[in-house]
Structures are given as structure tokens and as C-alpha cells.
Image (cartoon, rainbow, N blue to C red):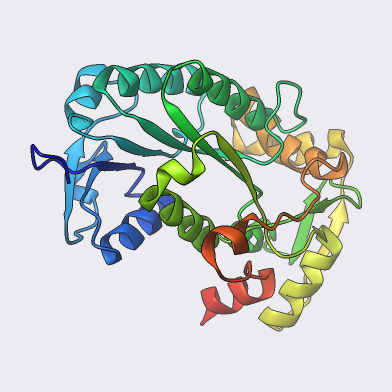
Length: 285
């Protein structure tokens, strides 16, 4: 805690799945924290945690919320066409507020020409953080393993243009464990970029087989063409950028851009990365 009795750590996204997990882990470790959220009444009630209001685009609220903080955990803003602009404004406010170390949740293979369109957003956010003057650590998460069951349609079929590509699906609990380890010893990780993955890269055929075994029903994967993928999702009425993001999740797998297993989770957490089967079992249990 700082001399002004302000919490040193600020966690964003605490009303969500990942930020909430990180906040709980810090509370368990006795770390004082602020939870910077748009709706403080929805923030989890945790020992040593103080909810404060602040959306990424609200500079004045962010400056108040980050007052006295030295370490910031930043999840990405909700998916939107102007998300990078929101991120840049938030990073600028964090630097102005005196934040010394920013831990940003990025995406595996973030690059300006990544096939997955939202990975480009993460790259541009990383680049802005690099030039902000604030020490940083980037957590480049693969696709959330927790989300894989949601890829299955009502008919028990996963459809998408992923070909026979592979992804190293990672557990949100493992990401939170890694983040908590970094946030409690940030200086050890300054300037580092970690690829956070599960213990194996899986094709969607293999993922479907795992889901079938764990859930006790037949789940299969049916490859689509890119054209079929857009057509099958057109009825949702989503804007073009959102359709592009959905479809490119699969085409990034097909292109091999989500393949590759890292040892970062076991190195940072001290435990093995969690398998897709174990995550699904825990979710069902």
C-alpha cells in the first residue's frame, strides 16, 4: 500500500470472467486493490478491494480511479469498431496518472497483419503501450478453452473455416494465475511478453472428440468455406467488423497462427497448464 493509503494495484474488468478471477486471486494474497469498473455496484465484494467508477473513454474518471496506483492490470475493452482508440486514451490516462507498470491482456500472435482481425487491435495497443513510457508486461492469450463448448451448435456440430489447423486453447484460470503472479512481482517481468497456452495444440476435430467424451454425446467438426461461414452468420445482424472477427477466428486457426505450445503457464504459475478436457469437466461439475 502506498503512503497515502491508496491501493497500489488497479484491476480493470473485475465484473468480467478474467478480471474477476484476477481480483479474487489478489484478494486471496492480501493485496490491496482498486477495481476500476463502469458499474461499481456490480463489482465483486472482496477483502482489501475498493470499487471505483471509470470507463476506458472517461479520462477524468480514469485519472481519479488510478490516483495513487503504481501497477495496472488492463483487460481489453469490449469489442467495438473504436476499441483501439479507447485503449490508447486509457493508456495515455494511465501514464498521466503516474502508473509505473501496466500488465496488458493481449492475444497470441498479435501482429499488424494477423489473420484474426482483433489480434491486430492488440498489436496496435501493445505498440502504444511501448511508447507510453510505462513499464509493461504483455500476456498474449490463446483462445479461451472455457469458450470452446460455446462453439458447438444446437445440433452438436462445430462449424467454421478452420481447416485442419490447430489452436492451443488456454484456461482462464491459468491466465489469472499467471497474471496474479506477475502483479505481485511486476519488476521481475518488466518488458516481457508471454504466450499463454494450454498444454497441447488441438484441431477442431480433436476438440470435438474431447467434448464428445466428456459430455457424453456426439459432437463433430464440419469445416466451412469462408463464404459459407459468412453466409451462416449473416442472420445474426452483426456489423461487418464483428462478422470479420468471428470468421477470422477460424481462418487464423487454418493459417496456423494459433498453433504452438508455450511453457509460460507452468513457469509463471508453478503448475501445469490445464487441459481442455479438465476445463470442460470442471465447468460441468
